[in-house]
Length: 372
Image 1: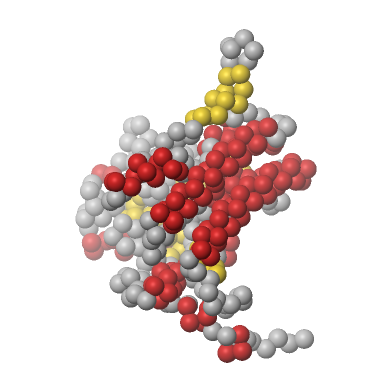
Image 2 (image 1 turned 90 degrees about the vertical axis):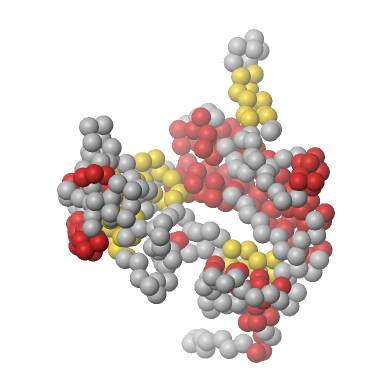
């Protein structure tokens, strides 16, 4: 663990002490764990972004930036520990493949994207400028983390492939999907206001999608021959949902298909998926209203085909030219790395290797003609 004493009253009556979360490290090389922890100093998985409003007055609430600088100190700690950990594993374990991750970019935009996006109601341009300066300092740490990984890759003439999890969108309202289902009679609540599965035909466990409460599920009541009819009813009520301005809240609806390319459905997935209008975020809470306000934030989890959910897939290494490919998907990452290692792609991989096109000479590539 790490501790940081930020404030201490002269008479010792009050103080503000930050303690990093303790992460459990699991390994099938127990003999290396003690050496790793001694050399690296432990693993710090996240910043204090969940505590940002508790650290003091924030800029949007009249603060002077001290609170944001405290948060960035925790971002520096996370960055340092990730860099130390990756370097130790790379240099001391000499892996053929290092699969790594970094959560800081996610933390930064969850915290600040909603406060710097001009489409958010109540947007304050002057506050946004000050927050963006803090956000830029955080993204500089992301750059530093990436630079450290590039340096490691150069040591062994290795390929570095970087992929994102998702994009990010500014949100300022919740859409309570279970409230919509309850109002339509598809979901029933018990005396404490919680869903009563014995009288519920459709429910959303997480807000992102809706499940038909089939008899195959624990507590389910819908028989197989009525499941599609219930799903059709869910689609109908979602399409009819309206926000305070009278505009539709749901912008698109998807049912899992055998040849689906979005990756939805499956044994632990949903029966009905849906996209939301700008500003809305998913909620599974049972509320009196279909929609309620929330503090401006950055959010993800929307359909992957929506443009602001698109992310990146980048590669640098021996023979990889500096150019943009016409099409690249995150699911192409595993087959590309497999081709680099000279091993078969994972059996359940759904992407394709981009290695050959990445290594092709520029004069072998065909670029579309640009009309001037």
